[in-house]
Image 1 (cartoon, rainbow, N blue to C red):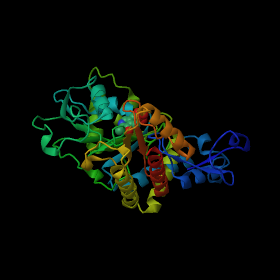
Image 2: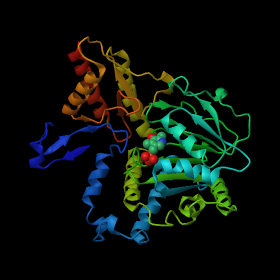
Image 3: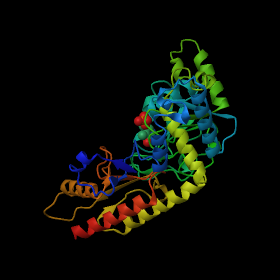
Length: 393
Ligand SMILES: *Cc1c(COP(=O)(O)O)cnc(C)c1O
């Protein structure tokens, strides 16, 4: 990703600069890096979209031009995910977090509990929120052992009938990932905020997938929901129940019937997400980007594992290929871990490697390496990690 600084600001920064362009790699967990090619294209048409004389941000969501943008984004997302017409794509707002409530309100049933798998901060938060609207059972958890792995299929408690099963295939904060798709006898729902479009999995095994766009798809403010017709029908029943209090805006069938335009949708986010989908299709689809993602993760984990200074605590089979947390082992008598960490972060920034600080709940470091992070960014990080380790010996 390129950051552009004015001459004036440049004098205040310590970043290496050439030809007015400063190369930085942004390892933020979200909002995260976007593909440079997409940003450049957006920049080139920002004030005059498709020769219409206005910015895409200035167009009515009911205009023909925007309608085309929206329709194509939907078609291309389904093409990437290889999903048929039994699925609809909704472009919503409120982030992945609003889906924690929406899923329970729309898809919870009066006579059955919903099953939740608890593998980290996000899936636990989803469970707690769902409890406010429906009966919930925890059908698997690795909380007691500190979220270092995920429950195996045969460890899931699936003996009782459930309204649906919810889980987070990739826990963004813990850097923990499922190495399988749970087999269940009810609708399967996944919070894929930090993993959607990163790996070529069978998306048709899911009845609903949702994601905040700001990690692997586009800008913050857009939430993607991919939902099967059977669950749309269920959400319609929920809306028509007596004494229901669900806002119309949160109802999936209402949103689907209005093509996500029950009110003004996040138009710029949809436009930008559409560009990212095209970028991925041009690259060769999800299987092509997955090769790069696997290679990036392999290189980084290999180095962390052989190093004496850094370590990652997650069981190898469940290591995330998108979010890689690591801690620094302080061996000095004169320097505390906190000082070592802040020295590390300062040096990383001087090398144009930004936002490596881990989540506030875990401390340590975290490198988020979503689709838009090029291999060169991971190599630059590894080179820096090596040099910093040398400097501590
Ligand atoms: C970031 C994240 C969320 C929260 O997303 P918001 O859009 O900020 O609500 C939820 N779940 C997962 C897995 C995430 O990575």
